[in-house]
Image (cartoon, rainbow, N blue to C red; front, side, top):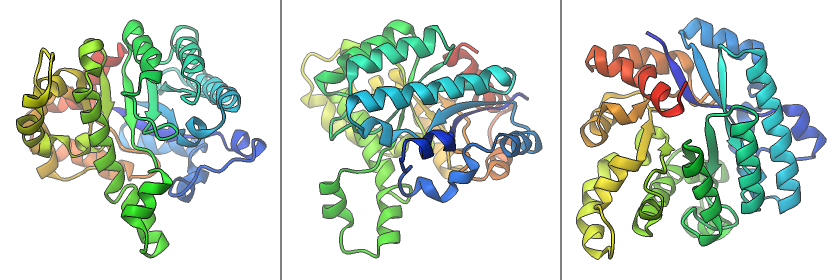
Length: 316
């Protein structure tokens, strides 16, 4: 069985250091592993992963001033393209976009897909406090839809006002984790998707496909409730909240290795909309692959999640 992992991060340390930048907490804690290619390949071999879809740790790039954001995104994409070129049987890549400049992001998006051969783009949460339903990002969504490639919507660090209101007064290390992978990331990313749905993003861009990680960022568990309350409020929508999510959203197993969330995701979204991911280097590759291999699902569904769905969506 072929295994393709979709949310597998990297960042070239020399670019980071030459630009005087920091990945930001909590990304710094595994920074040395992000560009250790021999170690990455060995871990993939040991676990039985055939292909990683590489993505840069990129929220801080979105938050830079526009020209610098464009320059660094281009450097990072060029380096990822070189990595793919050096190992075409082991890697593909999602583009990093300079979302601080939406028109510049469109130019880089097109270059990454049409010239570098990338399979989509990864966007990290808000950019300067704006979600993807903001009118300024309409050109980026149009670009993704026109190119026929997905956007992987990764969580991002909350704005300072949110951090203070929700996570202030806690011990700093605990607050950071609660604001990110311990809870906050997933709640906000799920809300981000619902904002896009209720604001009509997928009515305007019916072919746009969005991927979210972490077993759906809480959406499988809460979609029925959201649908019941939000759908009656929508005007001019052809589909309900749940129908839109099930048509335009794909989820990955990233960072989740327990049965109950997988069963919920399968019930709500179905096996055709779920793909495998590790979240390298922030989650254990062997544990993720072990869960994939042992999960109580049918052989056909296992193949779909392991690679079949990714091959179809990303046209691999």
